[in-house]
Amino acid sequence: MKKTNNTPTESNPQHPVEEHEYIGDFPIVFWASLVFCGAIAIWGAVRPEQMTSVALSSTSFMLKNLDWFFLLMSTFLVALALYLAFGKYAHIKLGGPDEEPEFTTVSWLSMLFSAGMGCGLLFWGVAEPVFHFMSPPTAQAKTAEAARAAMVITNFHWGLHAWGIYAMSALVLAYFGFRKKKPYLCSTPIKEAFSGKYVKQTCHITDVIAVLSVVFGVAGSLAMGVLQLASGLTTSFHINANTDMYYIGILIFITICFMISASTSLDKGIKILSNLNMSVAGFLMLFVIFAGPARFILEIFVNTLGDYATNIVRMSFHLYPYEGLQSWSASWTLTYLIWWIAWGPFVGIFIARISKGRTIRQFIIGVLFLPTLFSILWFSAFGGSGFFIEIFGSGGLGELVREDVTKALFALFDYYPLTLLLKILALFSIFVFLVTSADSATFVIGMMTSHGDLDPSTKHKLTWGLVISLLSASSLVVGGIEVPKAIAISGAIPFSIILLLQIVAFFRVLRTEKGDA
Image (cartoon, rainbow, N blue to C red):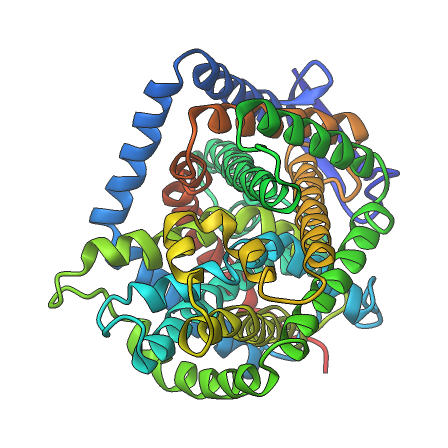
């Protein structure tokens, strides 16, 4: 069945809805994605061991055989973002000449950061630098050289390469959405720049793959967040929350909260939660700095800026083939790069949606440089505190991190005053970050399965919120952190091809752009 409506909709006044294929009241992309996700959720519930084996096998294949591709692609996207920020297209506005940003800079940065990696920074802020300090790939463990290498490695994983992927994923869609008044769909650039008898079928496949990438990426990350919340409850209140019953209970509570938030508009639920959470996270970071070894942390921050800047080019092409460390690179660097690519459609569409009225230069600076700078400060604070405990203090944190990374953040607070308050605030922040990410995901998937509607219906959003929670539950009952990680990055291969096609399409259209002075 087909429906045609060439007039703007009430919820989406900018974009005419073109002819699309429907089954009942929903587009075919909605049903195709839903059926596939439902099948995976049932598979995980009925045959969890089999699903685990397949998920881990596919991830292992990507990490072992396509490491060169993902590293080159990530580096290429950073270089492309820099060219756009400072090249001849930098002045082009994402929107009409007189359009102003929909959100203030603070709210815009808070929302994009919360959606992009907020919960991840809380999860890995202590764990990753300390882990690399205790088990560096090349340096001697627990030395000054290991500490410096750990900070560079960590920020390489969370810095320009991560945000370069997000920036380009978002910029292409923001350009076609606000500049060309086209739907916010991953297939839009392909449809606009290419022609041929197979374009329509390709666009359907593209949109379904993008939806699946978002669903699996958010479901895996939500499961990992639940594990960290359970660990925090265990260490903070001395209860055994690391059980399936607690995991499912925490997940149900998160689901109820993000569905309530998803029932509100973008400028209420997500905006308010993002601003609140960045305030709490900022307070925690400042407390860790100034109630701890402030001078040591700030020196690490300055030192890391220099080390990162001087090593970024080398690391952008470094896969450790001579050192025999391909397995280490696959477990860390490549896992992160694939993860960011898998999250590309989710974060890209969301950032695109909130970025109206900014020039390409403003957009790239806000999405690429500012989050990277904040991440370096964040890891300097939390990782630097961990270094101080291991080098100059009583030690013990490093061994705990190697044993269980989910305990790292809460174990650090045991060395600080107001320990219980810090743990409660951290639990609250993790919880709100998870709610915000899931809320953002339901919003994005709602857009993707309703032809790019800027204000998707509540029933669309709630349907996908339930699907995400069911997939998260399937991965949680299997046990361990590896399965959620594998699920989160499973969409990277297909979406990486889509992203490259989007960029080609973007430049084919952009080269005809005269722009606004």
